[in-house]
Structures are given as structure tokens and as C-alpha cells.
Image 1: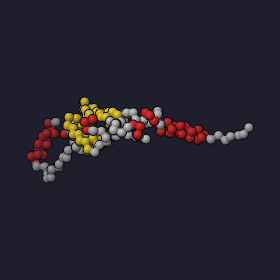
Image 2 (image 1 turned 120 degrees about the horizontal axis):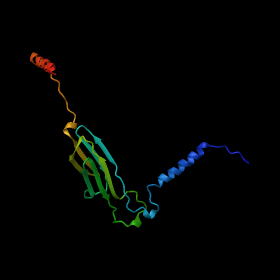
Image 3 (image 1 turned 90 degrees about the horizontal axis):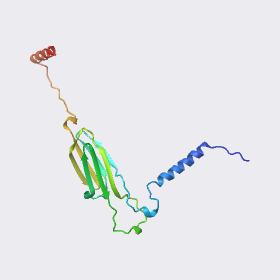
Image 4 (image 1 turned 30 degrees about the vertical axis):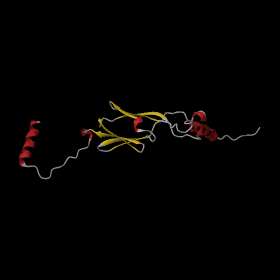
Length: 165
């Protein structure tokens, strides 16, 4: 009987290898024949804000403007659309299809600081941009400091005001 040295990392490497193969096959269909079927996808979104507005940029290349639906209900923004498979080419002529086709829907909760009724939507080069202006009370205000000294009348009013309170 041979003595085999136990290596605890051998099992970890084996587990990692199995998990990697599982995740590599995750986005693919069970067979190559199903690769051309419509699959739902979630387009990437960038969200940023400045002092005046909140901006969402949704990347939807290949989606026509008419196939996009934008709705605001309460504080929830929903962007829906569909990327249709171009059926001009025969499916059997494709060797590989990596683009996602089908319907998508993304929903976002809008912060209370934006005016959900005041939205501007533009679509250019496959990027949908939504701009929500901030409410007036949410915008920062600059308060100017007056130069000069307080007059004696103003001092008297400040003293009388503090005696009343």
C-alpha cells in the first residue's frame, strides 16, 4: 500500500474548476440550435447626478426608438423595449450569435429630490438618455454675506427681538 500525501488545496482547485465551467455555460443555451432563440436581456445603465439634474443613460444599440417605452408611475421609472432579431439572414447561415435579442424591462426608484413630471428623453447612437430636473428645494443655494457693519437701528431691533423671545 502506497502512502499518498494529502493536499487540502487539490479539492479547492477541483471545486473552483467545476464552478468555472458552470458559470461559463450559464449564458449559453442547452444546445447550439437554441442559440438563435429570443432571450431576455438587461441593457447596462449609467446613473449620475449633479446640482441641477439626475441623468440615466441606457445602452440599447440596435433598438429602434419606436420599440422603446418609458413610463413614470409615482416614484418608479420603467424602461421597456425590444431588440428584434434581423430575419433577413437565414438562421442556418450563422456560425455564432452573441448579441441578446428579445424584450427587456428595467425599473428604478427615483429619489424625492427630482421632479418626476419634468423629464427630457433623447435617443442618439443607441443610447437613451433621460434627464430629470431637481426640485427647487433640492437645489443648493448660495447665501451671500453682506459687507459692512450693522447700524445702531438694526442693533436696537435685534436686541428688542431677543427680549421678546
